[in-house]
View 1 (cartoon, rainbow over the protein chains, first blue to last red):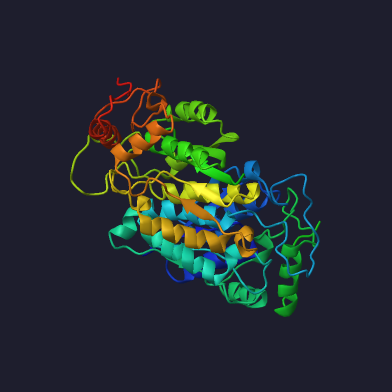
View 2 (view 1 turned 135 degrees about the vertical axis):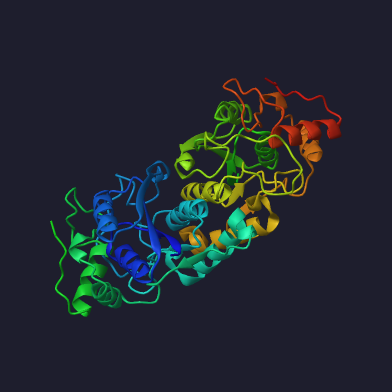
Length: 223
Length: 223
């Protein structure tokens, strides 16, 4: 079995990615981050989901992105905004978050001797974050293949993004086929301690619209 | 004044880089990592050096690379080897270390609205680490310029590597011209709590040879 590191936030997208990686026969090593996010309850979801999908291992690493700030997800003085269609990158963007997450995944993959990293980025029904776009992922993969001892020795790393060109509805349909129970997932940017969603932020509205468009009853627990 | 984030380990190279960035007129924000390294005393050196060179700010971030392991610098069960000329990448290589360090620097640079990151990589008198090579740095910069909100808005980030094509002797000569007191720096991979060097590891021998070749008395405190 090939090994893979799966970035797992506990949300709808990354949970679907874990289910896809499992269905493709990868030995899954799930990685979550306690990075000072307001929606810290997503980590409970990640733990339960990693267990449900029989990940070989699940690690949660503490990194202090709240010390760096610059985002409504990590700075208590910035309010998480309601969904809007401005087209601008919203203040829920966390500086260099995916770059940092992928870099820890790269380090762990090297130690595990894994050649695959899975990340649930999506460039259709998304918040407009630059580090979710295909051109960013491609550039990251190129860099990663120059960064490590593993790559110098000829074992190429691949960044898998199975959701990148799917709509939220298509993601949900694929997950349901693979047995995902979306009531276990926490997507909301300001989920409370029980993992209940606000229903109003970008992440909630994109998710809610996805269930509508997939013609699936929304299993989300709202506050 | 342009702002810059300076990766500062407290060693010879990164201290010289801080001196260079200051001499070029940058407002310097120094960043160190407590990453579970054996040579943790280098952090004391970094603190003193940041103060000596009047960095605007110096931060030390805790990240648990010792949980990931895979290196003689972070794994207590792996001994730091003596210098040898095998040409292979030594076990002091820390998986994806520069990628992780640069990624935190990128995040901080974005919050500071800085367009410059300085890193003391060197591809001549070095240990053969893949993430010190010019092609790696170039790929990192390309990726970074697709990763952030700042880059999407047109503010390009530049990774400065002023030492990349210098010999250790040339680095020392440049640092001395800029007033660096190398007795303050800690380079050894297994420096003791007082910052005293073993004199036998790769880092020590490359440094010692540098002072020899520069015809400068070696100010290192040895154990």
